Image (spheres, rainbow, N blue to C red):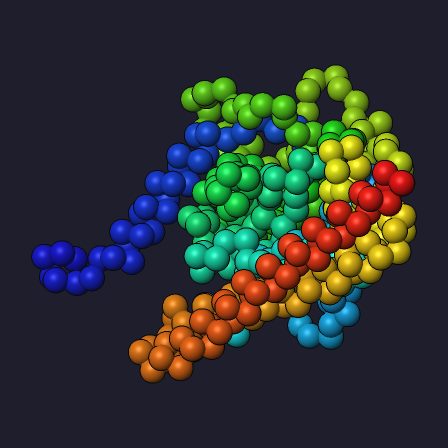
Length: 359
């Protein structure tokens, strides 16, 4: 084709993909998959029974009370004050976001990967609040959605480069909705490999403490079968019985900790932290902090609008940028004023409450 001066780029991409598949096959993880069930794609959550310490999974339309067409999901952390979800852009691809809950209001929407233009969906966060699993059609996917994991870097306030999971978690089909219940020591993920339209298989597995791979083998057919999960029984240990783990997977477990209602976190002094307005002893201090909360909500709304303006600015032409520049500068000035006012009202609330505590 080169001699005929024909374009070989598409074939080079196919070759790279095949070579990647071979490398992933040779590094197939030794995963113990103890059960599987085929369901309609819109019923996958009927097979997930998470302990309370694990958080909650919801469909996007149910959480946001929306009637639009959306295949995205929402993960709600155990405290119920942090939501992770994906919503589609005008082009139809999904972008991951998070929101925080202050009192009864959800706000402060943030894009998790602001520079990533890939189709990302189906988020889940481990109990550490830092480790994020999600599915992506980009980032080197080998076909459809692939499963990825990343961690939040508290030093830079951003996520690290996503790491693609290996086989058998990923395949040339759609693989998504990775969930790990640390209290039960079990995990789930979904795949539509070898399934008819509208169906998906939910796999139940026992997560490894450390990643381990299958031993090298000259039997390539055996390795391919394990990489593709052709039979989950091939992953079982000889003579083992997983009935108890399967029963546990379908059991509702209560939280191991007493639930504490936390609407916010306000440090009064070195020994005292308030989480609700009812904890204030001084009515005046409570009024001051309510003022700070109201200003915080305004600032959160302004930050979202400012983020959207900056996104439009970065993608726009010269005319669009000239139109947006004054508005962005004005919004930045307003935000700085709000943040200063928030700090002042919080300071007044803190000082007043500490006087009340000393008295």
